[in-house]
Image (cartoon, rainbow, N blue to C red):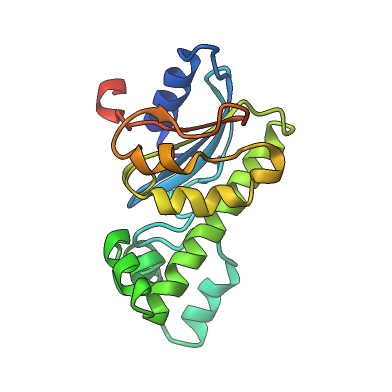
Amino acid sequence: IRKFGYHSCSHWNVGDTLARMSPPERRVVSVHLGSGGSVCALDSGKSVWVGSGLTPEDGVMMGTRPGSFDPSIILLMQEEFGMTPRQVHDAILKESGLLGIGGSQDMRELKEWADKGVEPAVLAIELFIRMATEQIAIALAKLKYRVDAIAFTAGIAEMAPWMRARICETFEPTGFRINPSANDRAVRTTMRISHQDSKGVYVVETDEERKI
């Protein structure tokens, strides 16, 4: 069984786009966050690590998928709750992640609920941010911390400046500092959102169809 990886066209688009910047950004952490999601470490356009595995379930939390979790939970679901393999599969694939914890797979809806103090929505968002941050940290390590840029792409990452800001807080000590005004303007576009004296942080509009 081999690790397969997902969202290759999206990560390819990020690497290709940032390689055309002036100066070119070649060692890049690509962060694809949408209904599906994965984080990829790119060196001159080549993937050296991706967070997803044989299936998309591994890695970051997603709309209906849990992201990385203890595999012994599968045995518990079968032995303690009497679930069949198919029921376990459907629960992991279709009923987990943001939907399973927060009650919706729509991040805009979850943010609205969280702002009103709805605890499951708050928990879902906090877990989403934590898992994305952990995956980015792994990608930085895979590139031996010699990283030119972090790039956010796909629906949630492109549309939620507040999410990008929360995630990047963790990486300020490593040189990635968001410019708040640029970050707020960057919605469904491709642009740099970091300070000029910072390492690059970008939003890259996803274009998987063109790459396909």
